[in-house]
Image (cartoon, rainbow, N blue to C red; front, side, top):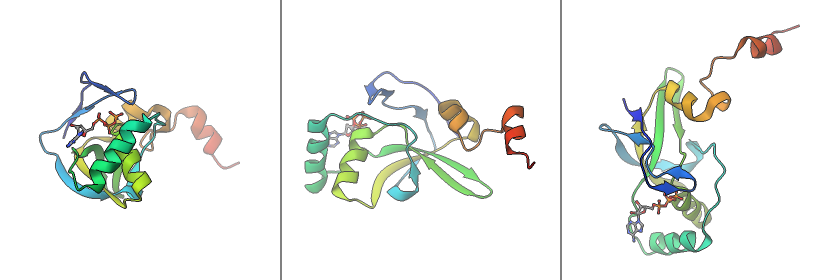
Length: 132
Ligand SMILES: Nc1ncnc2c1ncn2[C@@H]1O[C@H](COP(=O)(O)OP(=O)(O)OP(=O)(O)O)[C@@H](O)[C@H]1O
């Protein structure tokens, strides 16, 4: 399991690497299964450069994907790698090279707060969800 650690280099408003993983594997992950909770602003030129590199067959560093394994299935979250994500999206890629970093639901709660799918509803929300 991995821990969330802020490192120094910024990228799309986030540290370049937010997780430290000894046990991460790299896979071509279907982009459709990856949730990207944060909206990003990208540098147009950088996205275009990455598109050219990808089209030329250059292997960019895999993006980091936080991987939560639950009894009901797997969840994949990506918070950074905005320019590589934008480049693949615009090229119509169906998969993206990703380093899968196993994380706990608590780590996702830390990053997503109330938007996390793993957050237990508070008393107020429980009341709102209770059938009348
Ligand atoms: N010509 C290249 N060949 C191989 N890898 C490259 C090349 N250019 C960039 N990279 C790698 O691609 C990654 C791009 O990271 P970078 O932080 O610049 O963009 P991003 O993560 O996609 O977007 P952001 O930083 O905004 O989240 C880096 O790991 C960089 O080393």
